[in-house]
Length: 126
Image 1 (cartoon, rainbow, N blue to C red):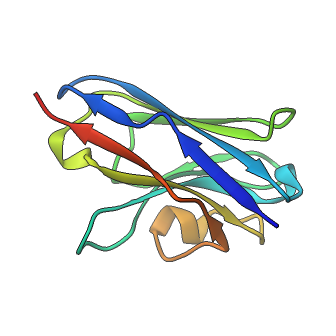
Image 2 (cartoon, one colour; image 1 turned 90 degrees about the vertical axis):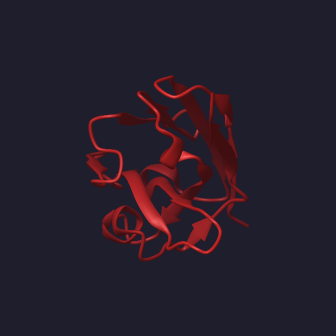
């Protein structure tokens, strides 16, 4: 059973930074694409960033490009999202997601994923 557990969300002031983490289990970590999307109630899912399976290349959606960095630790089966210069419109639930094909297209475009966890809430407010 694939499980993805995201953490690290919380309250941050506008302009601040936050680091999200996700631990994965039940899958061949490096072979899968793993990344993040976000979704607010009554809004479309929006891709944020992803690391391809195999080559480990990072891919970023325009939504937060230049303000986020994604990385992974294969030994720990963890993926990280460093976010900076956060804006109030970045406030929402962030989900860790996996694509079994190893490609990031679906996660980065927000069009889908094979697995995702329960998410972690990010609040940006002064």
